[in-house]
Image (tube, rainbow, N blue to C red; front, top):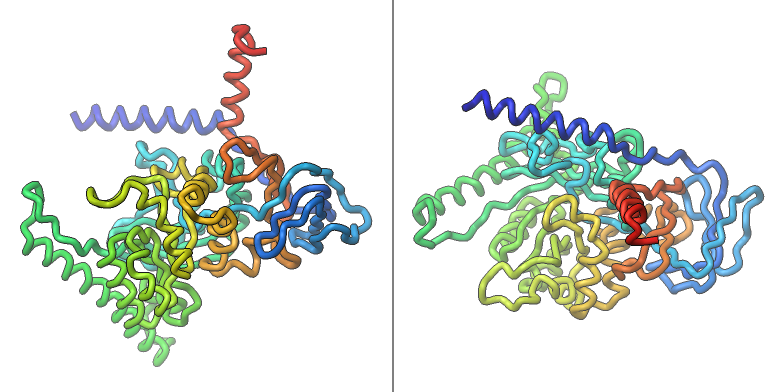
Amino acid sequence: MNYLKIIISAVILFIVHCSLSIASTPVPAKKQEKPIVLIGATIHTVSGSVIERGMIVFDKGKIIAVGKNVEVPSGAETIDVSGKHIYPGLINAASNMGLNEIEAVRATSDITETGRINSNVHTDVAVNPESELIPTLRANGVTIAHVIPGGNLIGGKTSAMMLDGWTNAEMTLKAPIGLYINWPNLSINRSSFARQSEEEQKKMIDNSMKELSNAFDDARAYLKAKKADSEKHQSDLRWESFAPLFEKKISLIVYANDIAQIQSAVQFAKDQQVNLIIYGGRDAWKITELLKTNNVSIIVEVIHDLPNRRWEEYDNPFTVPLKLFQAGVKYAIAGGGGGTMNERNLAYQAATASSYGLPKEEALRSITINAATILGIDSMLGSLDVGKDATLIVTNGDPLEIMSNVELEFIQGKKIDLRSRHTELYKKYQEKYKQLGIVK
């Protein structure tokens, strides 16, 4: 039986390998060679006013002018986009892009490392530049992904990745962004179907919290000892990786949804004197004063979801961003939920929040400048301002509307090929129905 399983697994991997080798991804774009001017479109800067029939100029990957009548550099390439709309490239504030290809095939998933403390893991070197899923995100306006690892406790370092490039290094915008922790579940399952007794569950929770506290204590002790005698001190990359966190150069990014988890994480970060970002945040709207007092930001994991509890309102997941916005809590919306392949629906997650009360301008900010600010990359991205990266999209309508399409895309001034597996399949089956005489 074991041999049969091995043979079946080998066959599946062979089929996957063949299918991936046949379907090649678009060629990464080359660096911007001359100034580019986009004219005639409605420019949504996000940071300021909307400019009708405006102009935006960028060179060497940076925006050098935005307005109605700006100076055009000599030798610039002019692209008439009259009637179109220009927006900053969308930012997915929490992603597994490049770490997970086919969820049913373990060999294509590199989200989680073995062990419970993997603070030395870096996602920027694990992202697969050849992923077939990356072009599907770009085609829907997503240009930057904040890639996070998995893990039972301390998962590793997160990174902001541009969705274009030949190598990991070319794709890396900033790394690390934060240290990711999957916060222990603090609730007790009292169902008759629970596999463990209450006492056993409480013991597991206590052990997890002690393990987490001990890791931070060990890291501080290690760094203190190394500082005292760096030449003789033996290196340990797990504890070495805590240094930028303790120096507040990066944030502690905690996955937590339940109110007890969030409260516990806030107190822990306060005790450890580190900056905190909550990823998930389903119950965050219930403790907004605590979050504001401790300057905690929220990355809302998923909008298209069901309530966590049977007695909650059906629209609770849809209204979390609205409640955070009204309370003055810093937040962003992520495009996860339902697997990596659904990250392309980032704009529609924000659109759903908008349809349930979040102002449309705020919904757009939640996937552009808000995300950039929380991740610490707002000096480079998130709005169309002079000096920032020329990472932008040209659309034929509002990107939050499902009928709108991205027609042009630039990442640091590089013109992106918007073909994807989706567009190739569309052309294939369009031709099929033409041959059958069903469409012309």
